Image (cartoon, rainbow, N blue to C red):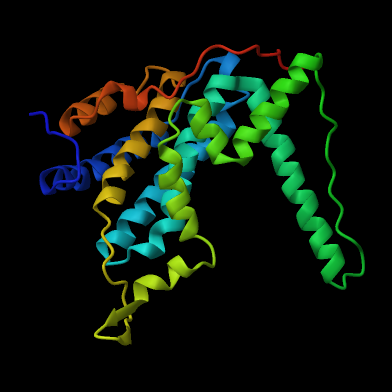
Length: 265
């Protein structure tokens, strides 16, 4: 039976039912070991690591919602959405994406070391070793800057994939991931010119968030499964897509071909 996907109780029940099935299938794939083509080996450690992070994040989000938490799960929902997109971005761009990830990670490590050295009284300063970046030509360097901009700014990434409408969702969760008024508002209620303080969030609905959990998991699984021998998640993805009544376009996180330099030998 095909269900109409949307913010309704029937769809919510289906989403709550299929998420554990999707996660269990992913665990089974990893638990039995995976085989990948040699040509894809360079990106698989990052891709597989992100997949595990995404799946465990979804498990944590579901537990929080089941236990009555709502706004507290926002940082995890943001991670879930962002990593599902990043996995598709990685398989689209290959080696240049890995180079951008390394550069972005090196920048974070360097900034952390500088912060530690500036504020901690250590006997020896923290040092960070980074490898120089290599570019084939000016076009390759331009590509790197664009990919780095997409990795570091989800707005750029969403636009690159023709889905700018997802950024407001991400930004909403970002507001609840930082020290803003939005993290206080759910606990403050104004009634009859009086302020009341609640110990649990008030007026918060998480139906939409719960509906998006399987979508992000499907996007993530669809990114990695074709690169594992036998495409092991294919049947599960197709079944859940059909069960939830999701359009095929929701998994089509692809963009047109772009020049891609070969990895250094």
